[in-house]
Image (cartoon, rainbow, N blue to C red; front, side, top):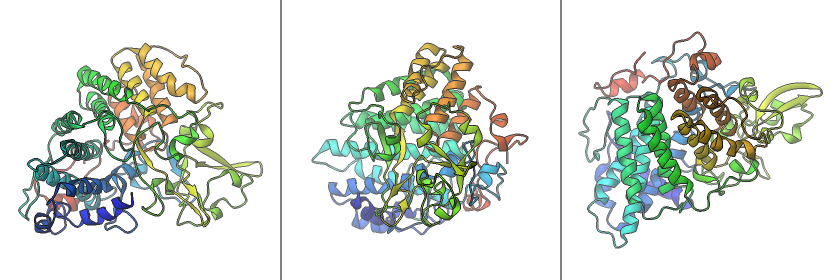
Length: 493
């Protein structure tokens, strides 16, 4: 992993990350890439390895100042019902649902990063296609990984802004075309094209690294995207059946199993439940988004259960910004084994105070606790719950309940015994995702999907959306629009 950080510095200085002044807002240096890189087959693996920085975020010694897509809690969580402010209030426009093109919009930093990730993939794919490899399996794997990263980036954009620019040509000079946004349905076609090609290319069907895309991880993302397409974009039964087929492929993966202890799921690195994660380590990367939830010691001064709270010594390593909401706590039965590893209620004597998040507690070192757990992208419990969701959506509630019970039983709350009609089962699946996957940066996307699928009305479900008509997708900031006169604003703004 130390190689990853070093190579990231190289990758970040290359042309495709530079792009152009208009679209990527930085000066192109593509001639450096043309002259100095991709001279041997050994150049390609480090290059694709370096592109993974866009899922995680920059290394401490690396360039740039951005939050990786998997590590950006603003888009995946803050608009949901999961969190409320802690001691050091930091929840902003996304949480308040007061989002406008001038407040809380997608700005240049995020927008440019997304297209830098795509640009990296485009350049690699253009260079590798005609390059002769002595090991053709390596060529197939590297190509598949680049296609997956590009698909992941497009999928992220579809869920955040809806319609998005499709830009799949490599950038080799400053003459980059000004492209309009394509409909989300067309972007999804691009995503599925990339994923199907990647799936066909992976030389093995096992997980060779928990920190890189693999055949099972590509199938997991395909299922995730198919559920979105089915419910949000009107893909219906065809997409749901495709999701079921992809999830069945993931289940075949040797070595995957639910971790017996829920505590270990997010704290034991690269365990048997993980399909893919973004790597974090205090000596090799910045903190993950969990830093927002860790309280610092002065914020919980006087707590009688302080030894049970994962706190930091300084407000640099723990921001005390978030606590779990009462609405999320209410999803848990009192005997749920996940509670201690999800949240803890601070006690001042007999007085109950804030409810601090204990998921992603980081690691305690001699000097301080540091938020350096891996950020999970896909794990087996998520696969089971996606299967439950897909089967329920096609009307097979019996099979849906079977998958639902897998995570319920590990949590010690037993088999589901509620109504077996489709709506009741779907509501319970959403509730179970809220328990099992709390604070794993998926909740807002879940709520949008179940809203569009008719299970809930998100405008009645999320407290800060009640009485508002804020669109479910983010607007683009005026500076983004100003950099490309072909762009139009997100619908509703």
